Length: 76
Figure 1: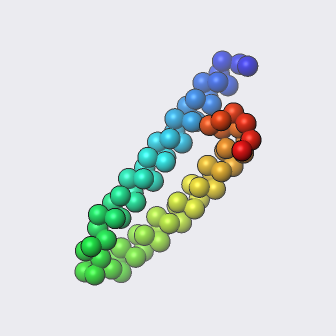
Figure 2: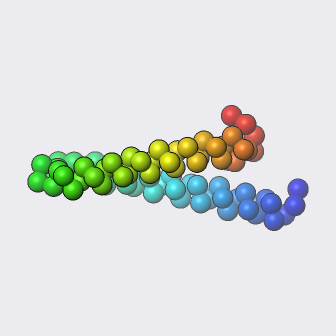
């Protein structure tokens, strides 16, 4: 296997790990502010909808990446 292909795979895997960590951080933030939602409900509702939409998009990307051999180097 070409060295550059392996490097690209490792870089992509690391970037996906960072994406998953960011998603985890975002949901931790949502949990932390949930108790104060009543005052900021409308603004936060839109933010949460956008977070959920991005989560779905990211999840679909991760699923397709995994199907193409990412993370494990093979199909699920």
